[in-house]
Structure formats: C-alpha cells, structure tokens
Image (cartoon, rainbow over all chains, first blue to last red):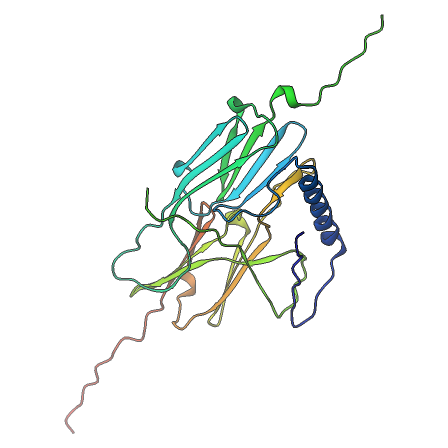
Length: 154
Length: 133
C-alpha cells in the first residue's frame, strides 16, 4: 500500500478532485496488478534512473528523465522481455578560475534493468531523447496483441 | 566510464508559501552555481522542459527560474509503473552581485538550463589629484 503524501502549506491544503481521482485510479491499477501477479514492479526501485512505463494497444512506452546526458552516452539493450538502459552522465569541468556556490548536480554511470509484462518485438524498438527526457517505444510482439477474427458469411 | 554510480534521488517538491493558480506538482530543480571574475553561471536540471517553456525573471536582486513540462502521454496510454511525476520546475535565488541585465544569456540543452549572468561593471577607481593651492 502506498501512502499518499500530505502537502502542508501555510495557506492550507488544496483539494483537487481531478488529480486525486487520477491518482486513485493509478493506485487501483497498481494494487490490481500486484494482487494478480501480472506485474512485479509496483513501487519505485532504488536505482537510477526512475522509470515510468505505460502501454496502449500496440506498444509499451518507457520514459525516464536524463537531464544533461548526451544521447550518444545512452545504450539501450533488449532481450526477451527485458530492457536494459546503460549510460553515463558527464559534467564537464568549468574552467579553473571559478568558485562553486552550489553543487547539487551529480555525474556518474547508471544501469537499469526492467522486465516488461509480455514479449516485445525487439527489432522495432525505437528511442528518442528530447530535452533530457528519454522515450523508448517497444512494440508488443504480434502473438500477444489482441486479434479480432472476422467471421465470414458461408 | 566513470567509477561513480549515480544514486537515485526523488524529485524535491517545492513547499511554497504562495498559492499557485495552476494545479499540479512543483519541483525544485537541482542546480550548480559557480562564479568567475566576470560572471555567475547557473546550471539547472529541468528534464522535459523545452527552451520556449523556460522563464527567467530578475527583479532587483531576486532571480526566479521556472520551466513548464508539457504533458507527453497520449490519452490512450495506461500506466503500468510510475516512479516519477512531472510538473513545473521553480526556484528562486537572491543575488549578491549587481548583474548586467541586458547581457544575460540562457540556453537549454538536453534538459539542462545554462544561465550566464554577467556582473555589472563596478565603478572604476578614480584617482583624485591633489592640487597645490
């Protein structure tokens, strides 16, 4: 069970019914998936980077925030149901005569592995990195897609 | 590859005293700020923010940086896993140096804002001649 964060403020908590409903809907999906065991990952992993995974009829979409990461330093591998994201975030030095007031951004390497619920068509995986947001589109394998069978008149 | 592995850190949510007109979460971007003799540079991580959605405001010595993330999920998509939320980035600083407002430059690359704030030219030291009376 997830605890929904209470956001206190001097001006008081503003109740926003729409976003609360959306949050509730997501929670219900997560609980359902946990109970049925169809999807093992239902809570954030303690591994960089954090992922959002969505699906529609044809594809899975894996999104992650990688600000300041050169797309050339990202490596994406797929194997069966698994998706591996490897990479490195580099922060170049800023000259010798500078003094830092704040240094909150970090550099380093990362590796994240995640499993998707079904097989994917690994030949057609596409990845786009725009404004530091990486979107990986993974088409579902043809055999797992729902198929409609037409009934022909005799 | 560097030896250091990046550790995951949740996005910091802004606890603002002022009420916002727009609903949705507000996050505090991680920043680097460094100073050289001529200028102050600020780097802020704002993933998902396009350059046209960044706003920078310098009033008196109060610098406000904010950026909007446009929703990127289509209506047909359903969440399987959500580890991060998206929203607005917002952060404010008080600057101690005088800044030459007309020479400020801002660029966004790969979700990182680079803001260069050149210091205003200080009053040049004057030499006062003492004349013999």
